[in-house]
Length: 328
Image (tube, rainbow, N blue to C red):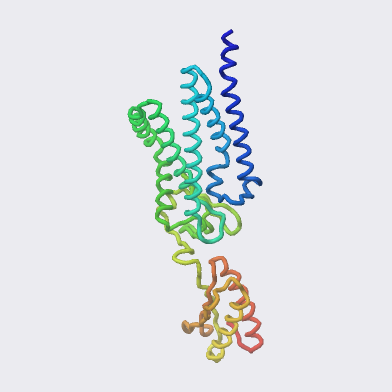
């Protein structure tokens, strides 16, 4: 019967494919015995390439071996080879896309320790690699891609007119990331007053995580045209200023010496301060209640200013009270 003959023809290739898949599972277990967290000799990028496709590649190798060794009708063998080619190219393209995505994510990752990412660049890099893989498949199978590209161009023009705002946000996001003026993980303050860490830049909007752990969602096109302050450029270090006013009859030399001594003590006690920086004091002028001056210390991060100023105020208050220095 034809069904029995077809079953006989399909059984050997299926067994070869099953044997290849079992070999793939064994290899995957040997290379990744503990899954993602246990990679004794393979790094993250090799893990991104080999984690899933190993089984598929071994199964495809088994099918290809079956088509070469066994006597299979030509139409069936040709169909098997075309199917294998499509599966292998797609899996290789997906693996390379994951590798490229991992590389882009690594180089777009901020130098400081934050859980931020540039999803837009990662997804764009993966999409380009997958599109190249699909074009290779179509070209190899004899499908002319010129009419397809023409149709995509005309369709893309129509879609672009209909999605102007979306495309504006998309290209604004690319501009934001490529200019490196706003990077994932940076602490920024918008002209409207919102501030926080840049959490992610997607194809449509940028997410900013406030210190209160709330999220501010800003369209990329708005962020690209607004005025903002990036507290992490050109460096993360920041000056912490504290303004103080003392009565006119105060001994300014004594006030200066005591204030600097207290500021030095604060910087030695707190890890948020910059090691080796010498605090200083500058008198700024005469005010109605007395003489004003500013104490300057330096912190590692813009967020550290709150702790540094808090401790400086406390210790200055105690020391001034002990030394009999009044504050107005």
